[in-house]
Length: 311
Image 1 (tube, helix red, strand yellow):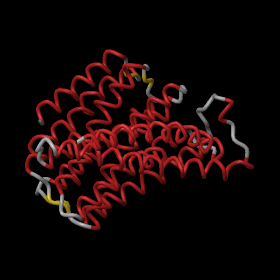
Image 2 (cartoon, one colour):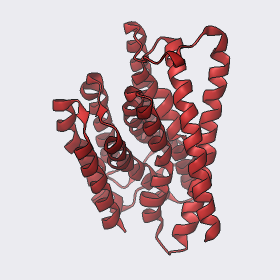
Image 3 (spheres, helix red, strand yellow):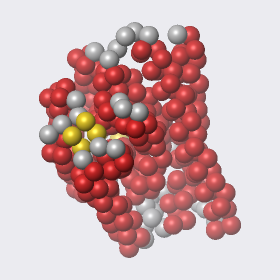
Image 4 (cartoon, one colour):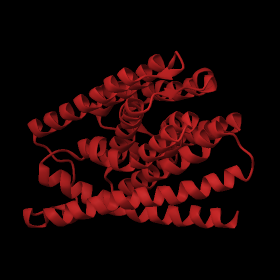
């Protein structure tokens, strides 16, 4: 049991360090490519912080553990909004870009609804996965083109002004940061699963709680670091983009490679939280364009309640 705790702490340290360098390199990359920090958060950063979920879900599906595969994604998306956004808002007021509220958030909701519709027969098939992956590719191509067309950049920190001569170094740092996130998440999840199994908890509960929390730590670390550096667009974009990527990318790719059986408990219990939290939060965002400390406390409390009910 003690080894599990060592892995848990070591993985967390890895994730915090990697998250720091990921934010730095992402902003430099955004400026060099002349696309907004929001788009970088929605695309490359969200992909990087979601890689742990992809690795976990693919390995679980191929290893005959569908509850872990889909439970990890559903639990991670709940954690991203209730836990990560909640904790982030407690420490820093999160101002949300209007385009995120008008375009990106509804797309995240549509992705969530699409997953529920596809999974309603308790199976994610190859053709359904192909549709999801196609949707993800179309979304990313569109947001990048729109940002390049507007030719805007939202960063104001002179420290992050890149020169063409150091773009290779920036790409190397970005790549190393993503590898660090994957390694850190892998170590942390191994430790968390070891602890959870020592307590005789079933796979779905492990996936929804321990594994989902472990694979959401990159988003938490990246969001807090981005907010501390006043890169709000990266923080919010990372969470929205990560949720879209989790649904369309991770489950889409996994279903194409290995169709996924869906546990009825996920259908009749977890999906309500999975869709309900972003639906309830949307009116707050569209009217105020920010998540305050009070809302952050409420989101965090909602996550604690959800975990309590699951366990």
